[in-house]
Length: 334
Ligand SMILES: [Zn+2]
Image 1 (cartoon, rainbow, N blue to C red):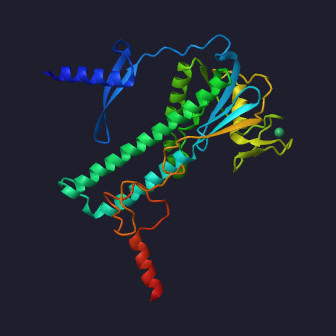
Image 2: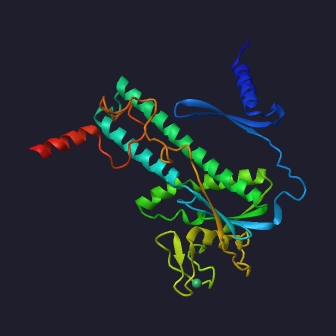
Image 3: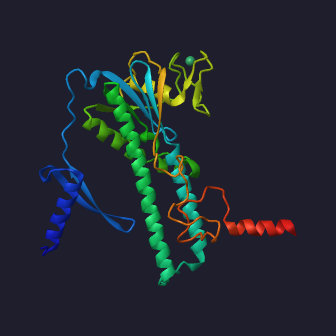
């Protein structure tokens, strides 16, 4: 029998802890979150660091460098010339499609928007609720993909017995305004969260993480250490010594040689990656080989797609609504 808010709270806490498999005495904090009009319980629990059988755990002498980026959220260069590239193209596509979708929804309802001080209609309230729901789903999709990417890195590092991760921290340069397009890219990148989830998961797996200065790592030739202008594509080619390699992996290999705390670069030679493992972040995302259409909706052949409120979650960027196409056809036949 629940009598007070405190009772409800304790009950919710117990249910949540039980569903996640944490004993109650391990729970450290519980936060009630409101996201997209839905309530969530955020439970923080104390979990012991993973213990490995002797001779199989991460070795403190084995260092890997991690370069965080937009196209590749994590590029890792490990020992024995092994490397890992995690592709974030599906995350980027999710951001782009969400933005295009939101813009289309706004355009469709703009004339119904209540003026300041005016009460909105029921249709307007429904539109607002739907917009919040879509926004919440978008945020959950991106967060899931980021966690998957970090999990991939940590699993790979444990497999390589990497004991120390040197992670390049680019946050120093993010305060500089870079124009509206690049500012948007940087905002969608969510670098703080990418670093935090990686640090959390690595620490739990018994791997030490050091943040290092990453300045110049993607514009310095690892072979002759001279400055190279930033490449347009993914391949860095040195005009001085004709060295050529993957831009993010070269940066990661250089980051692995940096000393934490911003000290001078150690004269350790850069070990360039040879064997590269490719992984993709966000297999659940609509762009990652799955249909972009909401499977619960009927096929668009019969009924006209409504842009506002209840259309499919994402229209491919650059596509036209059926109405625009029809108008286009009539002008052609005239
Ligand atoms: Zn060079």
